[in-house]
Length: 197
Image (cartoon, rainbow, N blue to C red):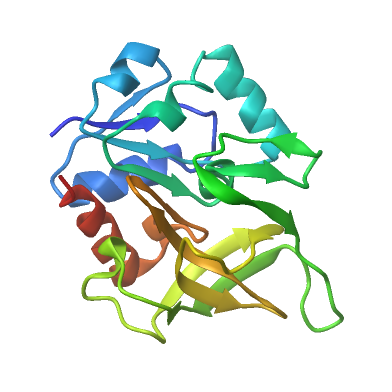
């Protein structure tokens, strides 16, 4: 196995690397096009703004590489949103591997934005990332934008409105939450990703 975490400048890369190391997998952190192409598994992490993240991917020459990958690709948090066509954050054109867009979450007096903390998953249908994960399990979220429930959604969450918590389309998969910070549930999801051929 050759797992590559795309070096997108996100602050969660170290904790993500340690989470995979706990699963006995030593990831490579790289933004090199050939290294990413030759991986067996690719993770696209993300923390921050969509337009900044897309600018980093453009500078690395990865905007055309990532959507063309055929191996399993896992987008995490902002990385999941980048797999979609666009984000309302800066009216950003994203990678377009999955149809749809990320929109700003609406703040309410009892629901501040960003949505930050533990929230429950609701399984919508069977998904490859969700083996041994059940509805009602908790995951750790930190985000201000979200993707509506759609055809790629395999698990959702509610924070004033339903949104996609886990998505899958072909070899592209994503979690809006941070599995590396989601205790046993997150570890199972990362292990499920590693088990994909």
